[in-house]
Amino acid sequence: SECLELLKEYQHFWIRDSLAKNGFRELFAREFLKNCDFTGLKWSELEKYFGKPRILSKYEDNSSLYEYRVNNYSDKLDEPGNLYIWIEVKNNIITRFKLLEIDG
Image (cartoon, rainbow, N blue to C red; front, side, top):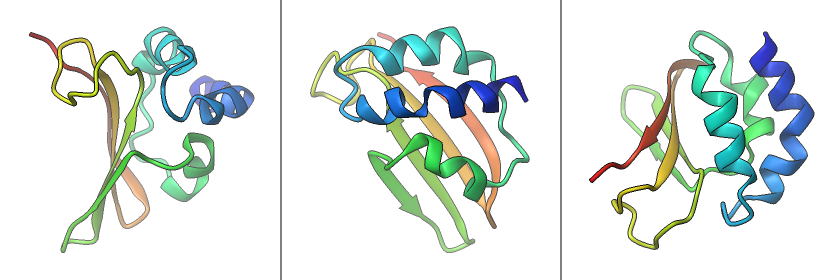
């Protein structure tokens, strides 16, 4: 898919902005990832492009939630304007891909 190709091409910049402070993640998410749907793809094939998540939650039903911070407007996680990517995975298949913006 076009989204996967963009992710592969820009993975270096995404990973370098791991603290979400140089603006690349926010620009990339707002311009490209907002239109992407990775649902149904294997997480093992995408994980390397996203790098280490800010939060990884594992559940008893063999599912996981990976959270990536996309910008860094505030240290308060629930501050309006903060942007996250949530990727839910079960049995290595992405079941949900969501760009989440905290609004006031």
